Image 1: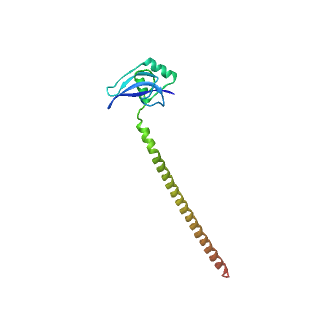
Image 2: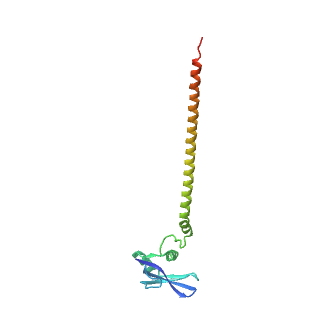
Image 3: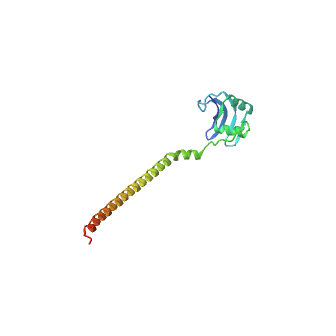
Length: 152
């Protein structure tokens, strides 16, 4: 699969990039099919052969995020710019395991509280049933004693 990507050139600490069409898995400084232009991030200058870039995109070459943004800026393609450094998504991906662990701990805690409440309710119901049984037993014992006395 072909990709339109950046090929670094320039001196140490002075990066300049060629915008090239190359195999997606090729080395950064490896062979490329066609040179489409350049990009200098320090001076904020760039030049792109718009016709050839449009051709390669129509053939199926995919642009990297930075090259995509350059092509959008030059109106070679009509699309929104892509976020090269999606900090929020990266932070959410790092926080996902922690949030899952917190949610599980909270659910376990709620389950424990519910189980404890159920046990307490069961114990209270058993205690009430025992008290009711004792009261009924006391009533039955008191009732025959009254009947045993002769009525004259």
